[in-house]
Image (cartoon, rainbow, N blue to C red; front, side):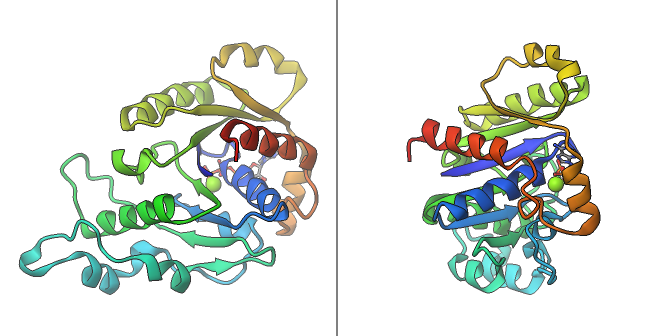
Length: 248
Ligand SMILES: Nc1ncnc2c1ncn2[C@@H]1O[C@H](COP(=O)(O)OP(=O)(O)OP(=O)(O)O)[C@@H](O)[C@H]1O
Ligand SMILES: [Mg+2]
């Protein structure tokens, strides 16, 4: 199962990624979670305290792997060893990689870092087994047309708010442009007072997570939210629905 998670800033993408990673690992799946966000915090939410080097910062290695003689780029640089060398596992065996910032240089930009990061994702999506979770920004910049084909589902996290729902439409367009067809929504930070917001979402809703101070406590105390069991049943239902939809 290859799942990309996107949404407006602060809606709960990293929280959802971490909760799903934990629940899939608890079910016995081998889980790899990749932080594709430029403000890196997935390792922290997964309980990892050591620093993980963002792959985009491995300048020498990137040069070695990507740049061929005469300054040309290799289209399929070797990256399979990177997974073992530069990932860290948390106490539940969840493997975490941090991509780092991708250049947003527009269509024409084909910097070695981008070629390298895309090769990493291509490897993760097409070669790795079991569960892959990608914690992404709303722009889903790391995904190209080729890799998008291997993404089974894109989950857009939405909070009750018009800007967040606006972002959902933008994500939907970006995703469709690169060929991701299965888009589903998780509504986070929900409150019954705003139930009518659900009517504004014309995408399949995998689940609804209430606003819960448990997450704020987890954040302030530096404890992974799954260790405090924050809304664990609601996330469990979402995980079960994903398994059902993807039938694995
Ligand atoms: N259901 C919830 N109820 C209350 N607080 C929540 C909930 N879900 C997440 N939070 C809190 O909201 C904040 C943002 O969550 P998170 O970091 O998961 O969002 P994000 O979309 O990954 O943000 P960013 O765009 O900065 O990467 C965190 O402090 C988190 O603890
Ligand atoms: Mg995040």
